[in-house]
Length: 451
Image (tube, rainbow, N blue to C red; front, top):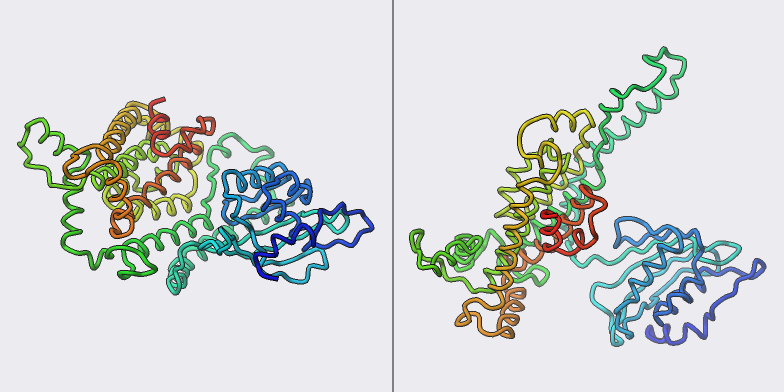
């Protein structure tokens, strides 16, 4: 049978089981039945194959899904708004006669394999009920770094090794102190002063992942040779003079200061360089986004161990080429103790840095960022019609930029990463913040700073 026929015949070959304790359990039958239901967008039928206490690890997500209720949300999200002819196709599998089965698979759309949508999975079922109790999905990465992956591993491995060793030594020390019960104790009870000095250690694994992502960002968007993996434009070391001139012109038109002054008849600072309105709108939207991140970075307790303001200032020009290493260093840094936070709160300065709360700086940056963001959208869509044309022409120009200009592509990637930083930082600072503030890119951040 062809690969596509696997889906069409799945229901006949593997009818939905009502597995009794005496029935022969087959992990393959369970998993095929579950995905046949997913392909029909029948979440309830798919959940009939899932145990109440399932642990589902999908490496597209930062945390595993525990329990049927969590897996229900995963299945519902994977089915909602997905084309009916986008199907999960089992490619090959191990002998599925027992309670465990390994599978390779791919996603199909209109009868053809969907790009970058292959994977491998392992599943285990309960030996009595036959329902799925454990799953792990490993999905094909969209970026194929090739030999660069080994270079990244070589670069970050020594750092990760050092951090992991330190964590292991700390654990061993803590265990030794707990088991050495016959030794004289300083105090029979723990004092509040002891608690005030507790530091939460950094996360070496997260730091390593962010360092690796930063290295990938540098290579893919800034250093990879022309045409690598189909990337448009030139790398930083081979940038064409006209591209460099455009970058300089965009920077000169930062936050539309010169164009607005010229429009008001003020030429004291000179004439604004000519830049296509779509290019200038995208550039200033990205700049307004990172601009509004500063108050969040200052409120973050771990910033006290990092050159936050200096990094942010340079990142206004180099964006995530610096922000990714910054967040990696932040992940590796220990969280400040309660005593350190109390001492900082007594110092003079911005309340964002001293007390970790929103103040005048947050409101000023929120209002300014939202204003520039709104102007950026208007500029990209409507400004300078003689150059930009109508809306259809502007959208076509934007699509052309994404396929021909690496700098503009990098700004779009930056906006996506800024959205991740926004959700993470707001959740760290204010868990009860409205979901829209966390997950609506840019506008949610500005609103949160003003609230």
